[in-house]
Image 1 (cartoon, rainbow, N blue to C red):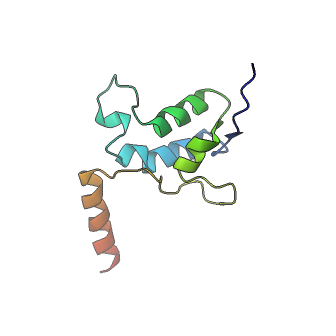
Image 2 (cartoon, rainbow, N blue to C red):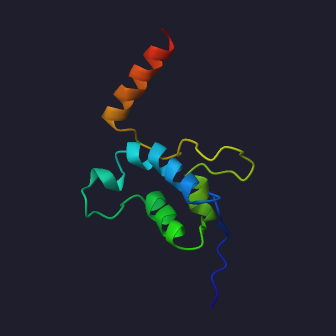
Length: 102
């Protein structure tokens, strides 16, 4: 039986994957980095894009949709639809926003 699930490639290369996960997964309360050094991701999106990075770069269309990917975007870093910002990142964001407004 063959897998007929549509698969898409949200990133063109590993650098784009790294930038996206750094701006989303590493700032998210569900990120594996929050669980400890030896922890595997518990977020299906983080797990799927990690597997894609080690494989052919493709994720299921359902994961791409959940992460907010659209084929029509020219940006390779966008906010994940399911990100839950850490309190540290919220504070850093507010600090940066205040500095921009000065």
